Image 1 (tube, rainbow, N blue to C red):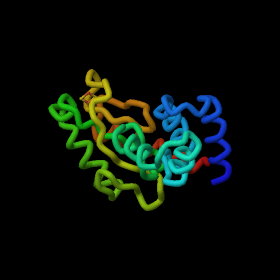
Image 2 (image 1 turned 180 degrees about the vertical axis):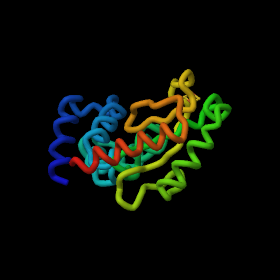
Image 3 (image 1 turned 120 degrees about the horizontal axis):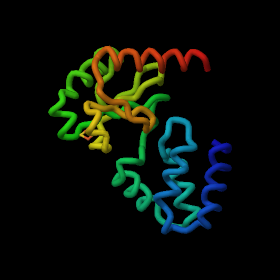
Image 4 (image 1 turned 90 degrees about the vertical axis):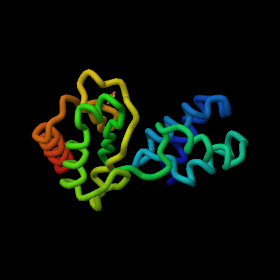
Length: 160
Ligand code: FES
């Protein structure tokens, strides 16, 4: 936790502890944290440092979908839930992901490797149906393509 605290201090200092920069501060802290989320500890520490109530930070984290209040798996899969992806049968890919990962949308696999969430359209409609994995878009998805992406990610993970 101290390592993260040190990183938060660097980020806060970069923004000169300005509450006006709360959103970029939170996004950077999230990026630096294991599990890409804003823990209660981090939120309380930041609130203390920029001198605002904890409840205010909590509201910001709840309001912005880009901020995560809960820990994510190593690979955060965001299934687009936008209109174009729905028309292009994203439900087939979503069902495959739920079945193969043994989780529902909003859950993380027991090994902490994958989290599956919905996301609003992220502008990859031309390659719909699409998912983002750790913010990288993958499109023209079929079950075979999704399977091969998961296999590649599992392979990378074994190398670590
Ligand atoms: S509707 Fe899915 S990326 Fe736009």
